Image (cartoon, rainbow, N blue to C red; front, side, top):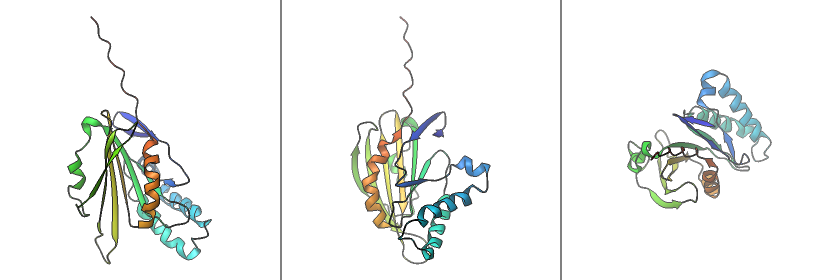
Length: 199
């Protein structure tokens, strides 16, 4: 359960596809949490034939980079499908509709290209919005292409933001198949009870 301001929300996800990052409060309480989490991730990948001992150092580096990005008031998951390498970090947050930022703010100060492919989304329980896909070249040496997908939904009471970033493009193909399932697993807070009206 994730606490955000004065409300809580939860997430029901398929653990065969995702590894949850430790919460920011857990990291703050115990400095050994990141290393324990990284070791648990290595054990997760070690039993997969595709990842030999020579590849585990790169898995460790990815895990360390992801856990260093833990953020408060978000639920964060490593999209880790079996059989392929993935560095996709999924960050999910929920806000009251009136407190949510605008769509334009998604691109303010963005290091990636602001050219985006916007696909309308409509769900039965989580409102409507858009999936924005954009990419760009990461800063630093080389020419690593970074892909970022951002979902923004609003049902009139609650605004949902699902932000996914990574460089493993084949993993995004699999992630697209899981995205709507992940969104449907977001358990929004119940609506506040209506105040009684006295005549």
